[in-house]
Length: 366
Image 1 (cartoon, rainbow, N blue to C red):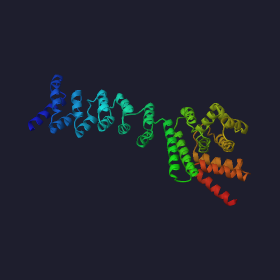
Image 2: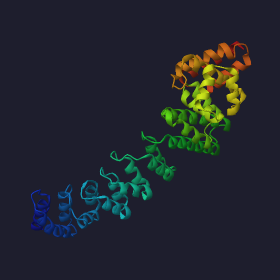
Image 3: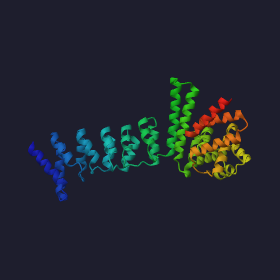
């Protein structure tokens, strides 16, 4: 056995020697391939370890090692440069999960192998692909993966962390997550239905706004259209965006709902003309009880020059509270309480804290 092991090492060294001739290697390859199927594990282990990083191995040699025991085959699959895209696809087609995961994690994973995993890969194999730092999945592949695995928390968690994930996938997932939470809350009776639904809706809109802030301005028009089709373009989200100073989305949403150009929306809101804004809001189907807040948002936007920009949420929120308290609800206690209640629900951070204090002060005064 010792002699056979020594011979095996010598043959492997010959294949690894850059000075070995092509003819010599071709003559030795069938012998080593046969040894790779030897009944003695020590022989097979020598071959797999010595040829771990050897290029130019024959397909027969590669498959002989790939078919060996896991602790011999898996490291070889992950590192050997002789595996081309054709061999990788074959392993993905007939190999077990461990071997497929080793292929998916390869830094030189071929385009055909990526397509194969997209089409047939199991959850574990897809997770290995997503963890491969050398593979950057395009928008189309991200959509395919989400469509296949939207019910898999593990895959979705990794997908949502991708910096290049298309925003529409993140928005749809956010909506689905909220719908699932509502069903669970109703089924398990966690809290009263109206309270749980308000809480979940609040979280859903906060997350949607966070996602939207990362969208390039040039893509907002198509994103707004998608949101409308999916029932995401609500009045409360529109108000929340405006109150928190995210004016690009606020303006595009108004333009889409009113079926007018973005230029017309900015002209209407920039002039602070109550009549023009009212016409725009009626065309957009915005409920009348939200008109006061939208007028205030437009006034702050025009006064601060924030139109078309992402304003600082806290500074914009403070200015909005001041405008509402001094102009829109200065003389009507009931209207002031109603607007303060809406602001409390739809603002964030220090603005919400400020509004809560105002609400408490008004309640004590009453």
